[in-house]
Image (cartoon, rainbow, N blue to C red; front, side):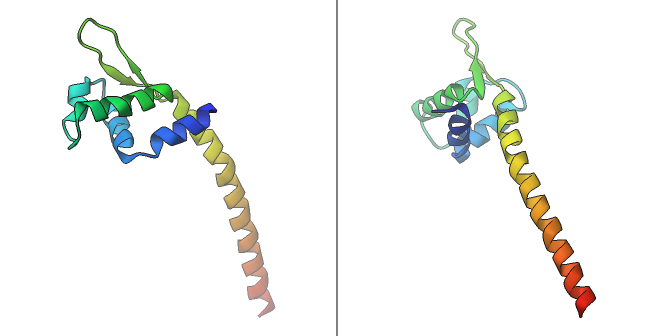
Length: 107
């Protein structure tokens, strides 16, 4: 699977998006990340594996404490991909605006 697809797949789940939002505030342990969710630690661990596979988080290896950290670099690829389509729609809106101005002049 290509990296962009992995990132979009990881972002498709609201729990994973909430985990990323929490990690944007700073590193956290699995237990800290699990606190607000009504799911098991095992389920949180599975979400973390998906985020790690997509390159969105890294996990430390400090003895028993394995803090998770956000790695937002893959989000830049997503932003660049979306920017292409943003330009596409801006051009469409500009064309529509020109068309509407032409119609107003004719009436």
